[in-house]
Image (cartoon, rainbow over all chains, first blue to last red):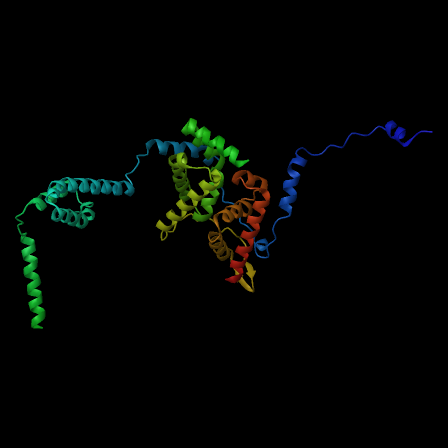
Length: 168
Length: 179
């Protein structure tokens, strides 16, 4: 009597039928994409075909970018200008410190002078050119301050306006 | 995985900037192109913007920290560059305007919208999405990529992508229904 096992061993199995190339590789993707999210609105929309594009466009695009990079001159960015301002502010602060140190030997009063100088002027100095800063410092150092002609003009103008208002 | 191929691209760039950038462009240029063109609706602007995008990639890639996928980073540059460009050019209408993204009219909540109108609404709705969802939506809905392909680009699992796409669709639907 032949056992079941013997029968099976006598059978010659056919080879599996062929499956299209890449079927199993793409199967999971296909199923997942089939299980796409349903939308009452989006499913009604018919997307327009993409506009036609010159076939060589992408082939040449890399060369275009590389040539543009090659000829590109890097513009000075606003950030750099801010950097310059920082440098001026730093330079002004250092110069002020140097000017302040000798007067510091006079004691407390001198220290107060230094404080008044830095607090009032560092921000303003940051926006001035180096020459302006030097002129400014020279002016500060000068004990005999000469009143500017423009200042006199504006003072006069101001008093005239007040007079006019009073008359009204 | 995307992050591995990103790493290779960045290594290639570090070894030889020009060759590296060329490889990056070859990989992403088409996706970036259509992403921009859907916003500009014409070829010439798209080309100009895309050149600027890859010039920015050239200058800034050394600072790229690899916290996101390279494509996500480029997508963000492209998006910002396009928005800036469109703001500048806002009032200048170009001659060669593409057909609207949607070609049929549709009735939503009893109101009929033309293809033009629904295209504009759709673009505005996408603009409100978080960046990741917008990316996934564009790649899936407009570019018809498979999740596995998007996963390769963004370095996100297929499950994560499906979740993002699902959320994006829901949000867009809510926005369109609310109008």
